[in-house]
Length: 64
Image 1: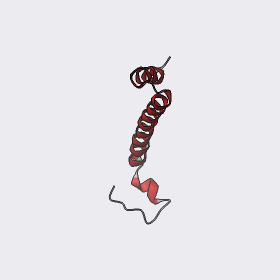
Image 2: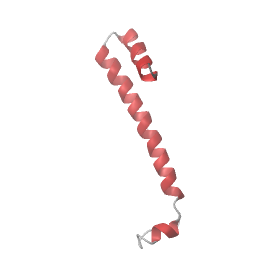
Image 3: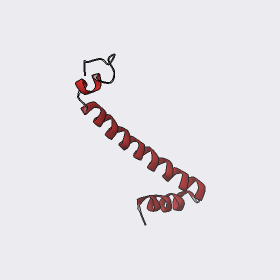
Image 4: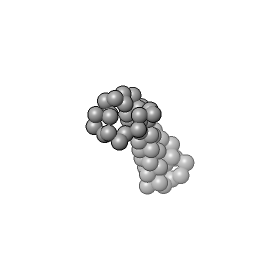
């Protein structure tokens, strides 16, 4: 049993609608997952040195 199962059980107990309970936990889990992945990817991209990026795109701004 994982945290998503526990959240589904809690929502099911309060709403008595299984479809709503499962969809709510799936949406929350997916949003959190996508937000974490976005933050990691954004951080990695910003850590790439601009001189490395300029090799591949001469029109890239160098104000990073």
